[in-house]
Length: 123
Image (cartoon, rainbow, N blue to C red; front, top):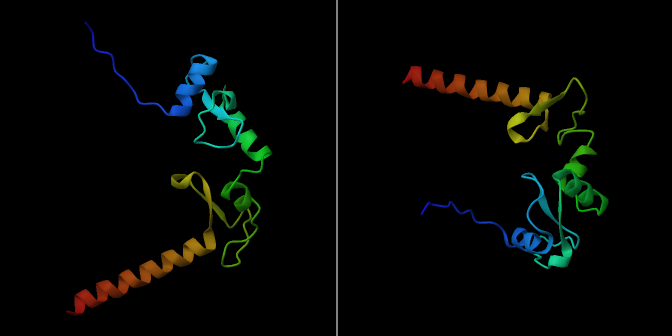
């Protein structure tokens, strides 16, 4: 008798499988029509894509930081988010960064490190 690997799945995914059959594809998601993620009512669940889930979210006004942040035109220190001054942080999901603020942070870090090296040499 062979070994079968088992994987835990969320209750909402299980209920979606019970109500709508197996996942139609590997990247399918269980979408909630009620906007309540913990809901397991099979009448509220259907299979869909990530794109459909994000479209539902935006259409129903459930977007959080992504939409609000996209509307911002300046960083918290007043520098504009434009082509020249805007960087992208790949490690944080391509989040925008202010190049002017980042340059100031790097200058301050280098200044502190130089002071630390000078203090270490002097002791």
